[in-house]
Image (cartoon, rainbow, N blue to C red; front, side, top):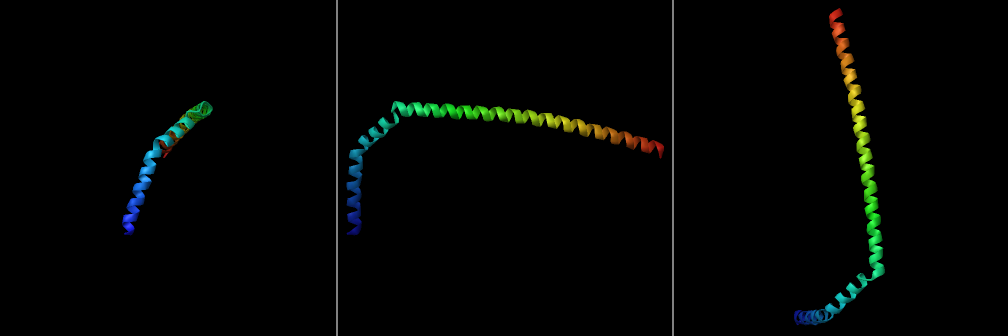
Length: 95
């Protein structure tokens, strides 16, 4: 008998929701289509886009700095290997 009661209650609730659902959908649409709400959303999107552009610019600068630093390290290591190679050759020649 308890299961029967639950099924009947669910049918009543389902019928209530079905009858009021279109009305609720219209209410939520009218709230989201408010011109002031649209303007604030557009302003927020613009701020987000500007923030993303700024982050992109910062990333580009970081990559350029890393490339420059990599070039410096490569030149330094190349110089060290040349010096070490020369010293090893001189040492072998003198020994």
